[in-house]
Image (cartoon, rainbow, N blue to C red; front, side):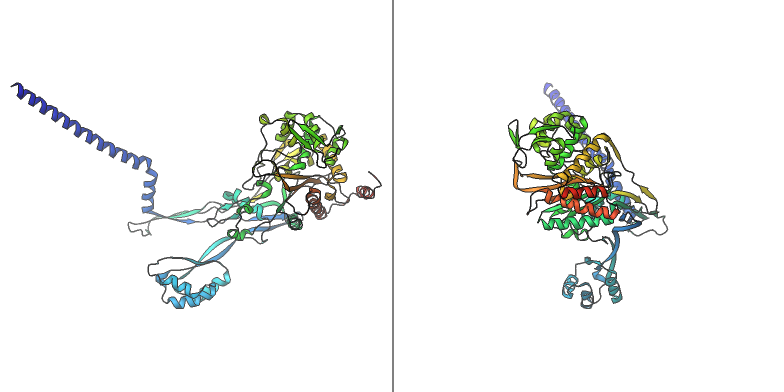
Length: 593
């Protein structure tokens, strides 16, 4: 009896165990089902909703027309197209519609400049149901010739491409549009959404076999065409700048060169020319992709002595020095463990601050910056916008690089005073010098003048005044110092006879790739300046990279400035200051100092 009870207890235990196992299995199955339901209904809801939508509806994209890009000049309202849209043709073959492959190939081949044998080979594969376009970018004449052949299975497809009526003019700031219709680099990249517009669509309902239900309602969403863009670029000045920089780079056998011209009052970029450039209509043929970058905005560099203008402005406007403040300076000075020389390695002796700029004396600049003090010096660097993007409408702009104030040591301050140990772009230098030319008010550079929608409504871009970065008095004092540099210092070749021009040269060393010192045989020449100084019409920054014949910027970058400044003054029909012209002639003859 005792044994029988134990057996019953054991059987009851087994039954409970089985029930528990079944329960666990059932709960597990429901758990798996729940997880799958959660995944399908919650996690992947959008995916399955899209599948269901695509089974029921068919969407056909309607592409918008991309906006075009124009420039103007000062003497007319004419808009000169730099970038337009052009319809070209692609030819393709539908194999199952071809009746006589040999006949088709023999007739089509010569028209599209393709061997008939190649076409026959493509059509001989019985498994081929689709052949990609044989040729693209066929013009209207070729399209008409193909149409006239009336070949079964040959289809012509219109395709829209960007066209460049002025060739590669402005290519470095324009960018291009890729095969997917996306803007890349330059203005095309920065304003891609504005230029591209919004695509439309036609939505129609389909039956279970995928056929359109003709009696069902269709939904049409019209595309929003992109806006046209009119740039601040002046057609004539751009042409002059491109001609001058290309000749200079070739003359000096330099690696490359760049020019930026800006109206200091509005911030509008009047020209941005670089050499070498590329043909945006043939961008796929470019091997070195770095040529796509706009050097003036994306390639930050140590500017060298042109930065002395900014450093001196900090000293003048902070009250640390005046243009006439003077001191005796040796050929070298030791700052911490570094011994720093001036460029000629001989003492200039007594110099005023104006003469420090005229002689481009590193030792005088270090002394001036030490008197200004680290905090004030950094305040002006930040005021002038260094270390921050200017916001110009060109894709890929660099902010440059400024060593944080808390990490700077005395030798950093010393080298920054003459443009080493700080990275800037030409556009930042243009913006900063524009503030001096504009009486202390800094205006952000911009390259877009206005937007025009397809209804003809115009949206003008107003100048963006950043604010006052130095007093009007200080701006005038710096201007007088820069005039003196152009007349008596290293900027003589930037002068234009009869006009007051102010500016500063800079010959910058290039850091080695490992950042351990500088290259001994490679330099970058720059010049920054503006004129006429009484009422400035333009700020110009020129840059020439690694010239092979001469080192100093006074022989490379300064003449580029002078040639372009002369051309702009003639173009604007600004009469010379006869008194100033006479004084320049006397100075050249040694009659006045």
